[in-house]
Length: 420
Ligand code: GAL
View (cartoon, protein in one colour):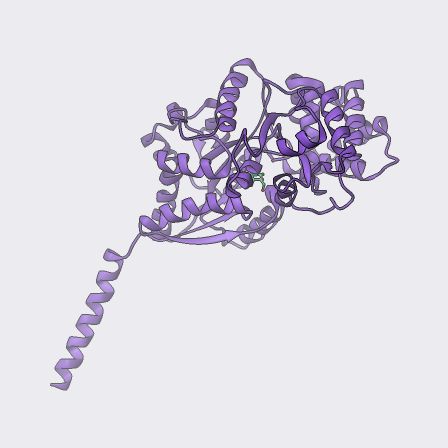
């Protein structure tokens, strides 16, 4: 009897063991990202919920730090030690770099089934590919060249919403006179870079922008126009408060939300902070295209690149992740929360606010007219080495009251050359 019982137990245990893989849900996805601010966290939570609904386990791999510099450092360590996450937020040329080193999984089959070549704008589709194969799935498109404004603060200061750089400085003077911080800013290299590239667009236009950040053409970088960019950049420093050093971007956005500052130059993930705080565009805040860049679009495509992983269940979960990110429900809800616009061209934007609708319209037009340019500050325009070189020169210049704009252009040429 005892023996029989033991046998029965053994059989039932082994049945349970056999049944486990059949009934177990797909697997685990570990996703590296840096979406940790209030608005960003709400957006990434959408993905977590959708994955869990399918029975997959979500393993959050969040590394705080705007624009992802810290996240990229951590990713390198993990990947080099042979233990990459299932997916990581990678962007632009970084996707190519990781793929060329053999780290990324080919997801072209899923892309084919999902008609990605048709539903994605060409520019987006190309960014997700390496050697003609899809290795990353796009989540949303952010616009960088935005100016966020608190209209109540503007009203109190008697300032007018600017459309040109001259008007921007007029408004900044009025805000200063009214005793508020004119421009909310965080002194981190990528935030300095975000303002800088917006100025390059405003002063040099899309063609000049492309020559500077994509082609890194030395003659264009040494030009008088670029000297003007540095001069204007220096002028802007005069409207930033003395506590800006090291401040996170979302804390700068909070200054605008709370009326402590009048404006912020930032990509539209800032909008997600306003949304999370229950604020409405056109009422509590205004999204204004960065003065002087109307019709131009500095784009930043958020995307998750898929890493080669060995565990079969986790591979299945990874496939679920790819399908989920490109699916319409995710595209809508994620981007509503993130402040960006969907990557697919077949999504109804009725639920989106006026800022997103303008962004979508402008992106389409800018693409058609050659006025859409990849963001340097957000790793879309060049390698991380060139980006690092530009950041160094730009941030040093911003923080040195005695820095000379003409010399800075020469330093920029030299730094980029050394990084190439
Ligand atoms: C960007 C990223 C955005 C947003 C921002 C601030 O580089 O593409 O999704 O998170 O950084 O962290």
